[in-house]
Structure formats: C-alpha cells, structure tokens
Image 1 (cartoon, rainbow, N blue to C red):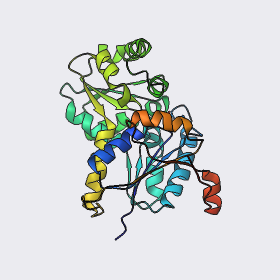
Image 2: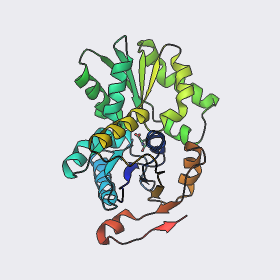
Image 3: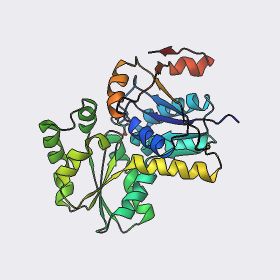
Image 4: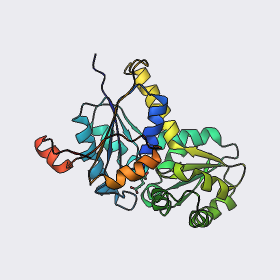
Length: 279
Ligand code: DGL
C-alpha cells in the first residue's frame, strides 16, 4: 500500500520548527514542505492576501496527493485556517488551537501571554481560541516582529536579541503572566532568550510540539498512520531560489535538510506543469 505524505506549509523557513516536531513524533511519515519564500513575510500582510496565498499553496500540495495538511505558519493559521477547511476535504491542522489548548493546561494563575507577528496578534486568534476553552482566562498579547529576522540571522545568544526581548516582553512580565505562548514559527529558536527575559516561573508553550501531537492523534483516529517500522522521506519546496532557505533551514533542522526544489506556484496551478528545479 502506498502511504500518502503529510503536507506542511509556511511563509518561509520558520515552519521547519513544526516539521521537526512532526518528524520527531511521527518518524515513519513522509512529509512535503512548502516554504513561500518569494512572498515571505506573511506577518505584515493583510488577512485577504494571506488567505489568497494560503489557498494557492493548499491547492498545490493537495495536487501532490497529501493525506493531511499542516498550516505551520501562525499568521496563516490565524487568518486562513477556516477558509481552507471549508474549501478542501482532507484534515487541515493549524497551530493556534493546539497552542491555545496547551496554554490553558499550563496556566495556574489564569493569566496567559501570547506573542506573535503583527498579523497574528491583530487577528486575536489565540485570545479567541483560549477563551473558547476557558473564558475565565485573561490573555495579554504583544506583537514581536523583530524576533523573526533575529532568529533567521541566527542571533540566538546575542545582546541585541536580549535587549529586544526585554523591551518586547517587559509589559507581559509586569502583568504577571505565568504562561507564554510562542505564537510564531520562529520563536522556538529564541526560546532561551525569551525564557531569560520572562524570568523564572513562566512556562513557555511551543505550538509546534502541540501541533505535532494533534497531527498524530488525527491520523490515528482516521487510521491513516503509516506503520512505524518505515522511515519517512522528506521533500522541500520553495517559491524563490533556495539558497537562503537551505542556509537558515539547515540551522533550524541541525543540518538535516534534504534536497530543496524551487516551484512556480502560478505556473504549476495553471497547467499542472513540472516547473521544478533542484538545488
Ligand atoms: N511564519 C510566520 C508566523 O508563524 C512568521 C514569518 C512571517 O511573518 O511570515 O507567523
């Protein structure tokens, strides 16, 4: 029996933090990753634009016959998940709901902080998801856009990053949150600096870990899990030349990135052609 792959997409390289968790939890599964590097960042764009991009990518990945789609990008999950779920009939998992659930479980003070891109924070998607689970929880949120380039630059242990974290997180710290949701693909890379800035006693929730567990649960329920004796293959696609993705991606995945192919989404969707180049 040919087992289908799990599709995963992000605006760029950040979603590899989600892929890494999916592979850790489900090493037997094949994955197809698409990073929309030609159009990154999504975090500063309007919801309409992010929905349009996300639908194109979902159509492209469904064309590759995937069994489940993970929207690894927090911004796309925040604004496009329901549109995708309405349009396509395979399971589609975003990162917001799993992260929100983990935050609700982790908090004991009932005060949760959420950090993410401008788009994610403006959508209030995490706040709504947390309050759907427990309306009593108080949510304090803050956009931290500079964390994305800092993570891509590899400045994980650096004075500029520490200072940026202190400034961004000061208010959340003062408000006394005991749990902080890392609501952006890149933030797990900066976990240590963020933890330092928040101080002891604050639990950091990584949406990537929770999302991987959700994927495993759904595939299990639908009897779509590949037998665990197999070892999965991983394919990577990007929409711009792959050099930057390969450099940063290898850092995110600890040098484990395989071949990366460039695709032209518009062309692929128009004529189903194979405009792919390997790097
Ligand atoms: N992947 C995005 C997210 O998780 C961060 C990068 C971007 O703005 O596109 O929200």
